[in-house]
Amino acid sequence: MWSLQSLHRFGVEPEAPPVRRAIARVRDGVTWHYWGDLPFFHGEVEECINGGVLAAGAYFGVLGAGSDRIIARLLDEQLPDGGWNCEPREESERSSFDSTLCVLEGLLRYEQAVTGGTGTGAVADGAAAPTADLAAVTAARRRGEEYLLDRNLFRRRSTGEIVLPRYRNFSFPTYWFYDVLRALDHFRSAGDAPDARVADAVDLLLSKRGDDGRWLAGQPWHGEVYFALDAPEGEPSRWNTLRALRVLRWVDEAAV
Image (cartoon, rainbow, N blue to C red; front, side):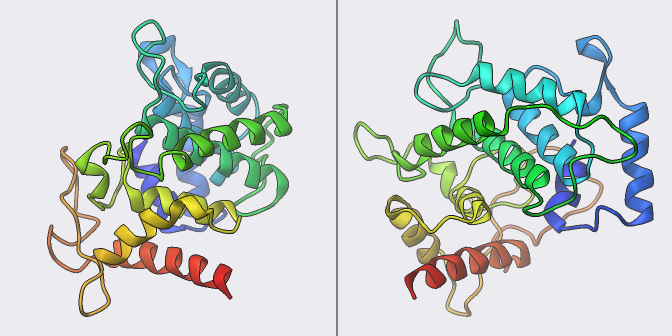
């Protein structure tokens, strides 16, 4: 799961032969054994995980029955406030920033793959073409984005206070965790001009820029890794700097 997410975020070439071999092994040999041995690219039950699986399937060209299943679940699970939450509805009908952004990234990547926006094509290795209603996917994504925009990407709508301090922690890899930089990068990827409601988030991003023009690595998320993908906490981060600069370029280009 997280290896595919990292390769996706690195921008690895999806059609490179070693990548195609690796993706074929995942497609043909990895299952969710807790959920009836579903194939990996068919997803499981949690919205945050399914959003990531959908994004990977779209980027690496593994769409079809699996993506159709994930999208049907995600559209059905969208909450009245517009977002998503991995907690069951009987426990909470309030959306989670973390789950919502994971789903939005998956829906956007799916749209881009199907329409030829970016990434790979929707079908690879003889898979059946996806049948999800693209208009419904886009509408759900827009509603989810409104959930975040209504909260300026990190504030409580009721009080204006920051929802969680960790949203200011810019860390790479992101895994399932929400942060302001990751959210801004999603809106940049969507291709629309910046909404006025991201201004606070952009100001936060600028406030974390160092005197040398770079951004520092945040506190890494827990869990064992084979090797570090970013600089140690508090040292200049290539990944944070890259993502921050492309967000600022998006903002600056819209202001011209």
